[in-house]
Length: 294
Image (cartoon, rainbow, N blue to C red):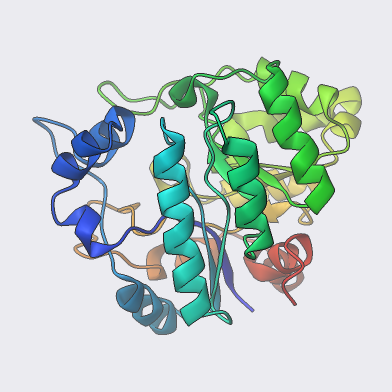
């Protein structure tokens, strides 16, 4: 079983003209990320039919659609409605996490409705883009809802040393994420993009115990690290909390990719030096267990 734990999907009406759509929905951060002015974009696009085709071609059995870190709750609810529709069409292939703007009016109630409709987690979330902090009361209420439904929360984490000039991705200081786990020990978190380097700190005995409820996904890994990162992180924390993800349809191998694909990211994982037993966990076993998706 191969499960991609981190993809992003939009309908054709969005990517027909992403700049116009982003402007109309007052989402400047998203617009700059997917269609940066005066420079090439790494963002690819795919319809749901193309997604399923690409999954079949690469041998990916299931995929988890993550929400974007929207600046407006209305946009988050719109994306959740897309996910619920697509999952209804492909319940054996697709799952989704609920997008939410923490602290926005009605956000908590809308997130409850999304979870009741079958979404399996919250995120991807990013405080710097969404104007909240991990100390906000609204954030605490959102995490209480995640505990009530026993679902994980996916957070974007960026390696502070991996930021390129002009990127829409801003450095995320790592200390607040450590404090977050300390403040909410009963929540389960997924720190995206290898946790921005946080797995290294699990070698500290105190922090290793503290981070036991944190998973790390591998989304966009080829844009950040050599494929030996799989072996290195597995040696640091074990194979049980690593979730394979691609950030599809992002171009993660831009020098050779012409269309979105899962094949190259999957090949990186398969040739990273992990054992067959470790690959079984990283490529799908961990996600199946975490999301209760047998």
